[in-house]
Amino acid sequence: MSDRAALLAAVAARPDDDLPKLVFADWLDENGDPDRAEFIRLAVAYYREAVAHPPATDPAKARRMEELFAAHYRTWLKPIYDAVGQPVPDVRKDVGSQGGIALTTIDRPLVSCVLHAGFVGMLTLSVGSLPSNADLPAAFAAEPINTLSLMLSADVAAWERLNGPHLRQVYSLTANLARVGYPSPDDPDAVPHPLADAVFGSEHLTGLRSLMIGGRSGERAGGYADAFFAALRRSPVRRQLTSLSLLSVPHLGRFLARPDGFENVRKLVAKPGSTPAAADELFARDIDDGFRERLTRLVIDTSPVYRLGWLTAGRPWEHLDTLFLTGNGVGDVGATQLAGADTLPALRELRVQNVQIGDVGAIALARAPWVANLKALYLDHNPIGDDGLIELALALDRGLGYLSVQNARSPVSVATRRALIAKYGLRVNLGEAG
Image (cartoon, rainbow, N blue to C red; front, side, top):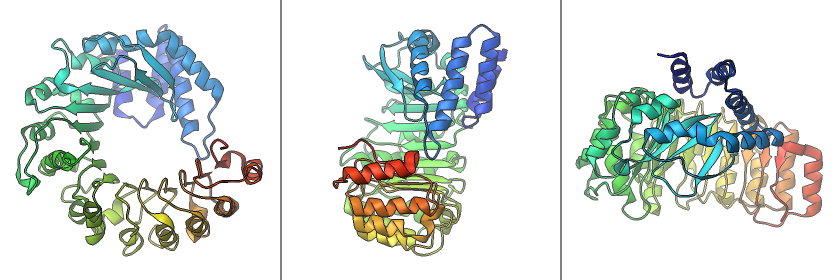
């Protein structure tokens, strides 16, 4: 293995570690590629700034990254696109919110990639449409790809063309489902699906730790996703996972009550379905104590419901550091219930965005005893006015690290906005003035 290959393998194997990235940048400097080295260092630094609380990104870094990318992106991306048998597409590009270069392809190729922290770490493939000359091992050798987003069709043979030892490099996989066949709606767990079993039966996904199962929107999405989730529950892959995202899987309650084989999952994202019945199942079941003991991150996006007893009653969520309740109907009732909870001792980041919380709920959250322990509180896209916003700002004086109330759906006076920004600076984000 060459020095370059060994260094790229180290970057792929440690996706959350900046050190291998910076070591590779040093190697690039020593081997005649100072611009790529500069780009990697800037991207790493910008990402650190973007995810801090409060975020404090440097516009000069963003401009320089864009300059370097515009000058070199065809050269940097050419090995990837050569490997999959396509020309490098024209792109619209900007520095993303977390430091990656976001590539928006103009001509919608079958393959696209994302530069994050200076590297191509993510590859998006339409598996059934790959050209016959695609060389996936070469693509994985060219860059430290550790994240795959796959659009899967019913063609098992197409998956087998992708399957191979290079997949051992994959840390994170998104399985987006299209035209995979529809299992019996009466008992989806009982219907084997050849493609689902082929994917999760791969002997090469040994490095997989993060999995998202997606599905088409609409009435039939649950059937597609259920077939893949059922195959996952039969596969030893489930025991490797530390992060699991289930989109359009309606039987969330069943899973939370009986998570057999998922003992290593620490991060869970779940969208149980679009119908009230699917969401209500979550509240009707007892949640396995193991989840309450182990989860560090929980994201729940349900249909409009107000009940949060499953979260605020019972045994504590001992290590839950990050909680997202997004796009559902928490409302003032749920916010008040959440504010009075004593089941979230480790919570450090709370996102309750677009959940119909008004001034009453905002004031309750602001006065919650645990709010002083939060590094960040996000209440964007809620109907919060001056009264709620002023009370929330007082929580910054009591220890809250960062407050975001962007795009409030109730009028906020110019005087209140100016006073809070003047006092708290980057610790408060109120978005653009309306």
